[in-house]
Length: 243
Image (spheres, rainbow, N blue to C red):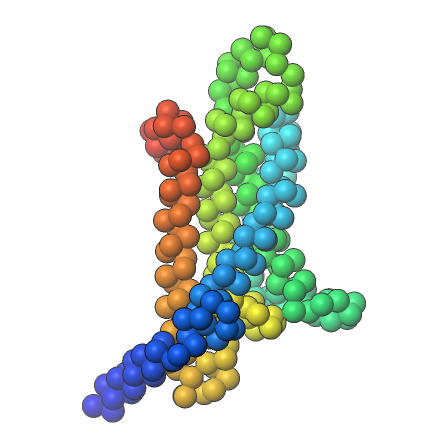
C-alpha cells in the first residue's frame, strides 16, 4: 500500500509540474518549448559541425579506396567512448584553460560522439556504389570531383542519412546528460534540477525524462520523412532491397 501511495504521489507531482503556468512558455527558461528548442539547437549545431568535419574526407577516402583501416578504427573508438566521461574530461580541460564551460565542453563532446557514425556511413555509402557506374561516368568525361558530387553522393545518400539518424539520436540523449555541466542543457535541465530537490523533485525528473523520450521519437520520425523526400524513390527501393 505504501509503495502504491508513493507511485501515485510521483504521478501527482508530475501532473502538478506539467500544469504550472510557465511550463509551456516559449520564452521562459522553465518552459518545455523553450528547453526543447535549446535541446534541438545544441544537437543540430553539433551534427552540422561533425558533418562538415567528417563527410568530405570520408567521401574522398572512399572514392580513392583508401582509409579502410581508419574507418574500422573510427567505429571501434566511437563505440568505446563513454559519453559522460568525455563531457567531464572536456569540462575539466575547458576550466583549466579558462574557456566558457557552459558551451564548449558539451559542444566538443557532442561533435566527437557524432563523428564515428557520420564518417563510417559516408565511407560505406560511397564504397558501396557500383564501380561500373563510376567507370561509365569517368568514361564520359566526368572529373573526379563531379563523380563524387553527381554520382557517388546521391547513390550513397540513404546510407549517409542512416548514419546521421543514429548520430542525431545519440546527440539528443547526450544533451540531456550534458545538463550536469551546462547551464542550459535543454530538457536535461529538468532532470538535473529534479535530482537536486530530492524527493520533492521526482515529478520534475519524470516529466523531463518523458519529454526527452518524446523528443527522441519525434526526431526518429522526422528522419524517416527526410529520407523519404530527400532520397529518390528508386534509390530508396534499392536500399531496402539490399538490407
